[in-house]
Image (cartoon, rainbow, N blue to C red):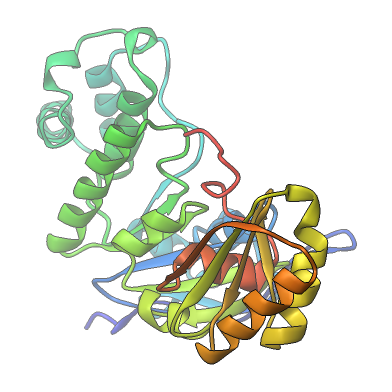
Length: 320
């Protein structure tokens, strides 16, 4: 009988010297879902996956995959998972077909079985026409799709995707999203780590936000957004040098944490619309002028910034 939980983590700890990379993490991932793990660089996301994938031993707590302990039953766990990391694991000197056939053979498939599986996966990921092409001729998106295909040769019920769309162009990212949804529709469970808030919002059934090795928030996208208020006030200042003063005024008037996601731009949860008028009067009294005022529903970017104090990659203008 398959456990209703694909992943169950309690009090997980992993240290590297004096650094507690994972510091008491709890996770419960239902079977058949997409579970997103968000966090800035160095938050501990990849370390959690490495422990769950039996690549690292935890220093405390427990972790189970479909009810099997990742330390005591590591061999069983490895048969239940597929892992796709941030860096491609394919061999640059071989063609797509040759890569997948080798993976298949390493996993115990016969030569004919490995070739058949390779052909099926290449078709699934839209790589049939490039099957015999040297990987040196592949784009970044094609290599990432091949890397994901390689992790699926054994058709694992649980798939770890560690920032799978990093470095991909927007069109290829959307193609990857469609592939991920198809995998879940076919019965897989996916643990997805990402720094892209729109990705988690589009894909994940539930989301955990990790910072400094701890889970600081968990829930559906809607629940996380609601946790910081029903609406967000957005102010664009005419002069960026007024930012610090404007933030102090906004904090005093609104009584909430004020964020500064980009130069000359401040945001704050709006708990009472009547306070907005008071804020505009207070800013005018300080001779602070605004070029734009808007009220929006909270986004995951706002949640991320409010909880971690850091903008997401998208907010910082990082290229994909």
